[in-house]
Length: 115
Length: 115
Image 1 (cartoon, chains in turn cyan, blue):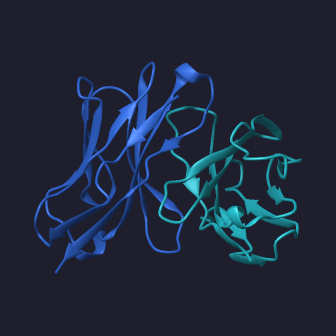
Image 2 (tube, rainbow over the protein chains, first blue to last red):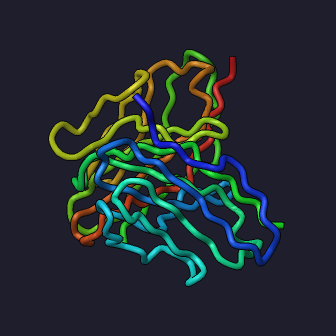
Image 3 (spheres, chains in turn purple, yellow):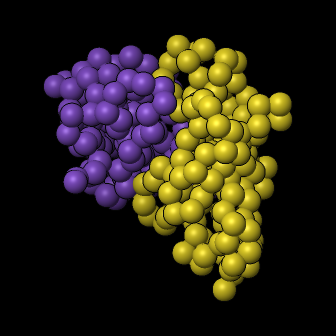
């Protein structure tokens, strides 16, 4: 079946521009996560949704980062006034329930380059 | 906070030899432990998990991992490595103790299987 889909696959933004990254989770998945993966590093947690509720946004690095999931399916991660340090791969993941023992299903990520 | 250490940057092994990728963790409460693999320009793929029960867990593609509570370790193993196992491997941990559902990842280990 279809996995987690992220778009665009690559995004180049000039410093100061706003960007929006889209995630289509697996249909019916309750939980949705955003992670940031810098080059040569492991994924770092950004935020977590359970259906449409954003239950944890403590990983967002600044108030320039904003995420939403208004209907409990598709999610958008928005970065305002991008900075060079925002360059990274942004990974979206979903899982079918809220259980701590459920593995996450990851998309292929959006590689953001800020010039 | 929960955390994971993967002490080696790169693991080199000859094809057909046993493969071990090390992971130690730090959490309060009972750990939920996971291994993921990442191929170039792809998202993370789930390999296996430990939740409770038997300390030796078996996963996809012939991988297994051994949970050792006293050493707080969860090393990934494969009896006979294949060239196609060359990839980036991430260990991750969750704990219900913290009241959040985030998965904390290690920095990853690059595995190179030499033909």
